[in-house]
Length: 298
Image (cartoon, rainbow, N blue to C red):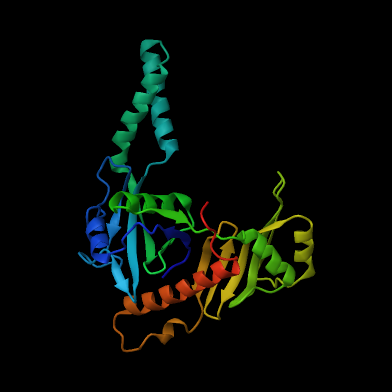
């Protein structure tokens, strides 16, 4: 259900009421791009059902879905069309068009070509734990996460967030775990790791599907390389990759986890969402503890 999480702490000023959230999201529902529109964004029912709720409540957790549609108009296509037009103008008038003429021509050609461009849609899952005041956006891409956060801030009164921060930097903690060949608490080292040097060269070493309890990794750390990604498993239920920016990537629920849902439960969305959010809430809490607790804002 979730693959990559960028984590935020919601400010205490937001009242966190589901009816008000649903009402606010309804003011910015997703519609497809108009012919000359480069991008369209908005909220869609997370169940994928037409006219469904925009905020689904499952076991005290809220699930949202943010849609992004973009017209795919390659810059190279626009450049070629503009160049051809500029050459034709110069050949006809004997004068090279000004920068302003070129800019206006680029805007005109873009507007003409946009209706012919294909569109691409992407859905971004959003998970809110209102009790813990935790928000997670299902993406590792900063640009997508920013779109979601800006849309929420614009829609909701007194809503603000800050990226989750911990007292111990993830890179520092990951280096210690690798050196000790053991992760704390419910975590275990998995079989993926990336280390980078901190100098200008930024030399990198990557391990994939490889045991991490080897002396070679310790030598890389002693030599000044810092972990930027580390594969972990949590409580025998979830595997993931922790990054030095405190993102949780490549989330995978291990075999048998979703079989815990009652077989007779016809609503797989509710059953899967309850398990996924429940496990990820505990995993996140354990991760914050393993990183020395949450940093207190200055």
